[in-house]
Length: 323
Image (tube, rainbow, N blue to C red; front, side):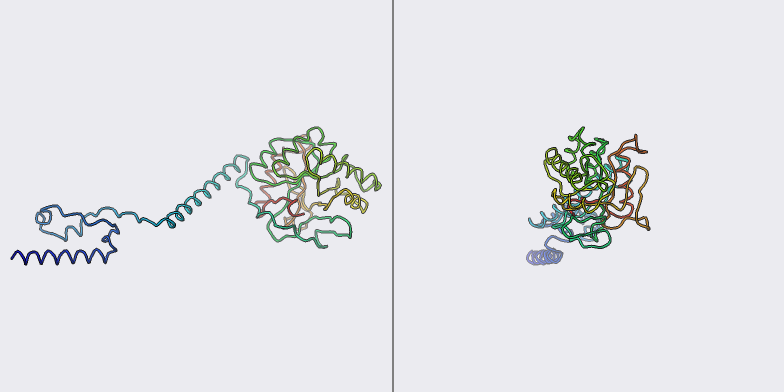
């Protein structure tokens, strides 16, 4: 009788072991520990036995333990998601602090090489002379913000551009900038190129070659001394130039002459194109000016530009990376 009882117990144990193995080496909960022993008399007291154990509350499942590489990958992925969420949150907070409804769109990475310039809409070429560019040839949804002259030196404008990650290209005239070249050194330290806009901001088109050359080359020397770099780009005051201007600029080391297709003000954008829209590669002109001349501050100006550019689905990129 005792032997028969032991045989039945062994058979039950074997059935239980088979069930555990079939459930995944740990029973239906997915755990790896052996089943806990039953409390004495539990089944007898209720008269339900194994059925009560099966239908009653179960302990929580044991979390799956991943192997090392998989665990590292999962943790890295989770951290990346958290970092991305934090970056988006910070960008939105910064944008709202500067009065923007949404952050500016991020520009693509800096190109490995500058695009080839070919004569056509937006580009004027002449052999031996620097190209004149209104629109950079690109299919990317990018445009370029350029700031001229240098009369207004608003530190909040610099800070706003830096915090929002807005790249600028500046074109500085010495007679307006010389009172505080430190302001433009700060822009250069932020990664914004300081380019040539002549010494005295005169209409070069009505001047002779030697006078034009003096205006351009002397500002090259001044910017090299004040900023620490000799500019590659030059913009003639008022956008007025002739062949002598380009020859003089080339002799001073200038590689390209960017003009513009749009002009920005604190309260509006003005477009040269009939459709009154931005196009990929467009160059936007604005100025370092204050409330004595404009209906707003430099930060109002930047807010207007960012809102307009972002609303049309464009990002602001650095002109000096493409010309």
